[in-house]
Image (cartoon, rainbow, N blue to C red; front, side, top):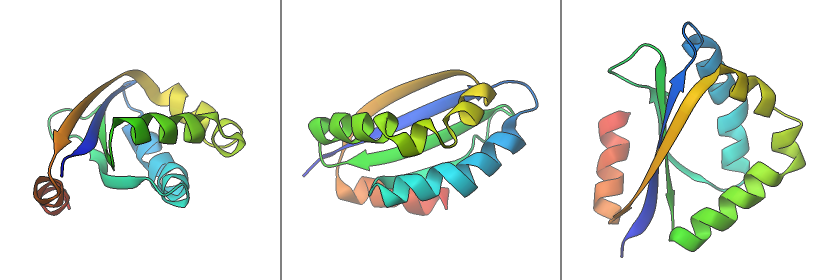
Length: 112
């Protein structure tokens, strides 16, 4: 069965990748896990020193929408790392693919 996999690419403001990575690792990732979001990968991009990638998997598109509405609408996010994270981002782009579990597991292994 295919799952909805979101690949979010962040183009960061020049020189902000270190700050962004620390915020993601210490604040955003723990929050995502508390909210039961399946984070496949979260790391600096290999191609650009000012880019970062977050890959999340969901049961389907409806669960992705509901999960993100709940997470990004929560007080924990809005009063937590939101402002600091947004301040480091120049632009972001998301794509969503429907992938089987074997492909998702392959992504996990390839990126770790």
